[in-house]
Amino acid sequence: MKSVVFLEHHEGVLSPGALGVLTRAAVLDAGVAAVIVGDDQVAGLVAEAGRHGASTVYTAVDAFPSPLPGARVDVLAHLVAEHGFDTVLFSNSVLAADVAAGLAARLDAGINWDLVDLEERSDELVGRQPALQDSVLVEVGWRSPQRIALFRGGSFEAIASGDGEPVTEAVVVEFAAHTTAARVVERTLRDDEGPSLADADVIVAGGLGLGSAEGFELAEQLANALGGAVGATRAAVYKGWYPPAAQIGQTGKTVAPKLYVALGISGAVQHKVGMQSSKTIVAINKDPQAPIFEFSDLVVVGDVHAIVPELIDLLRKRGG
Amino acid sequence: MKIAVCVKHVPTGTLRMRPDGGLDRSGPGELNATDKNAIEEALRLKQAGDAEVVLLAMGPAAATESLRTGLGMGADRAILVDDPAVAGSDLVATSRVLAAALGPESPDLVFFGQQTSDGGGAVLWAAVAERLRLPFVSQVTTLTAGDGTVTVVRETEVGTDTVEVALPAVVAVSDAINEPRYTSLKGMMAAKKKPLATLSAAELGLAADAVGASGSHTVVLGSGPPPVRAGAVTIEEDAGTAQAVLDYLAKRDLV
Image (cartoon, rainbow over all chains, first blue to last red; front, side, top):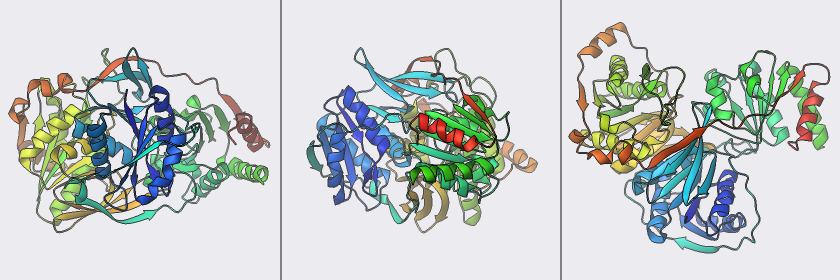
């Protein structure tokens, strides 16, 4: 396979999820390339991509200062046409999913998404995709000259091993008329210092058991102490306790961090779908019958308002 | 202004798989939940100005039920692409069908609901927009119509973007954008009289091998059980609970 990985970045940092996909792709394709689209600062990210296995890194200057999918579709379509890539890989995010699907239509290429693994089997590329609320693992393939794969966040660990000196090429692309018909006029970055949900190794999520919007301060403090991000159930988001962007589940985001801490979450199927691939699940709930305990690694039957403040104290003491 | 809303008839309740790996759609179905948000947003624009709201679905005859639900909410007419040839279309083939149906309609705005409860086509809008060569924006939580443009606010992992999009455009709405109205009995009665056109792939100018499984570029190769989770450890609340949780995490290098 001749592959290229789309490397998303925000605030000068490459997405760990995308670096994980690059790490995996480098195992399957020693000549894997990567592409970084953004302003002229992206040159500073090239070495990091190289350390994660990219042998060539293409950089392109975006159509606008803030990222939208269209320009990225143009850049990737140009690279595929110019260099004959047969596989384009993405780590899921709001941006990456839109780019991947737009590119699939542009190239008329098969797209498989929500993948958790990829392997080469007798010259055929096989993706693994949890389906039906993750109750089965489906193997999927492609039947088009170009293959597009979109992976669930956290599917692969990003491992830096190379010397970080890839071949670098700046590409200049003429943007399509419809690409430049949408532009960001205002951007407000979330002011939290922690990682984003898609990239976090640790997610602390809250449900109705937190009791109020103020209750989510506990989730934030615990996430802060663990170096993680905060998520919320749909029910908590509907109550207005936490912003929709943090919603995890069927109608929200699907995440798979190393550690998922569920605070006062019952574990309805709608939520389970979005987090059950997490490596370790710790659930704290006062209801011993809560469904979440059926798929948790550590079951803590108790009151979040009593246990979590004490846990935060212990973590802070440990850290200090 | 003409607004098209792409909707999906999804299975009700527990999802099941057919032996060939496809989703079993033989049981009862309903209008996909977030599609109601998309219809609601179209109806709000219709109320604020003057717009025709056209629903578009691809699916078997049973999908008529979902289209009637949307017509009952207040949409003006509906189109159903109902053809055995389109069954089994993957995302790329589905986008081809929807784009072929949308093209002749020349809508100013095409709405999609952001999520589907059956896990399919989660990113369909981007593919449809690309086929129509239209700009698109997803994860929209508020929308304001301007003069030949719409200005939307969208939520991403890193923050909030305000995006200005020139029309015609494709917009995927989040379920946070509005609270869909209920369909009244009067609305449902009126819906029965509203136009509902049924089109085949051939009527859309699509060759039989451009749609369905033969027009698809992805395949299901097989399926098996997911990896099992090892046995859980249980802690009942007592004085040392927080310490026990910390010890558990520390032992696994998670802190």
